[in-house]
Amino acid sequence: MSPETRVTVAILLITVCTIAFGGLSLLMQIVRRIPGYLDNPARRALWTAGHAHAGVLVLFALATLPFVDQAGYSDGLRTLIRVLLVAAPILMPLGFFLSIVRPTATRPNKLIWLTGAGGLCLVVATLLLGVGLLV
Image (tube, rainbow, N blue to C red; front, top):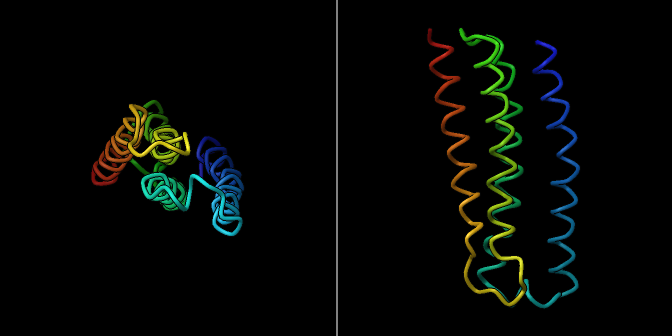
């Protein structure tokens, strides 16, 4: 594993603590019946989706990063793939969380576009990595 990939993996492993803290925060809102979460279906759905996507996408990035070094690409393109794999689990959950910050909001605001940006990062990274492993 290259030093660049090792550092990326280390950073992602550290972010797992933030995901765990987010899960604890969601659990406390349920247990303490904090207004604005349980009584707001839109907020509850988007925050649950944000937390779930963060966890799954970090695991996906951790599983795919070791293959980046084996792709038949230049160092610059491998760096781009690493950045995109890290950007996806950051941008997508941010879009879910920040699009409905106010407890009284019933519809996402314009920051929901971050979710699509994270999805685009994921698609581009996986497509580039897959093609790079074939050539």
